Image (cartoon, helix red, strand yellow):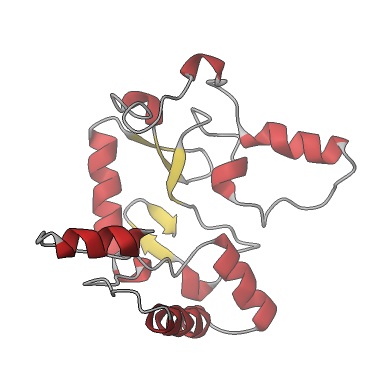
Length: 184
């Protein structure tokens, strides 16, 4: 995969700067912290070490840097504010921030050809929640991924840039109080 491509580029004399982002906060990580009764830092540190051990065992050429999402919250907030100024980001009623795909010229046309006519422009995750309930699933959706199930999104393809604090789900070690709201 990327290691083969990287090795080929290096072999042919290209300078490769490889950055591998480490996602160290998301819904699944928070849920796992709760299940294992450990801190965010403990859990993500454990899996980061295992990941690095796997890279070593597989003889994969390591990246130049491995930035963690939680170390760049300030930069993320500034980027979201800039995207909003350009009309490419918006805040939902529940406080999450989304990238507005339909406002980005050429989005979905460069690597793949998405059939925009067949996508429901105002489709949202609420339909998925209703279908699950109709199929006999019930319960609280507060632990569901807000990016997928937020009925407040403008477009079905819009994706989360910042998730608003969810009182019954989020943990104190996994939220930040910022200019764009409390969340992650």
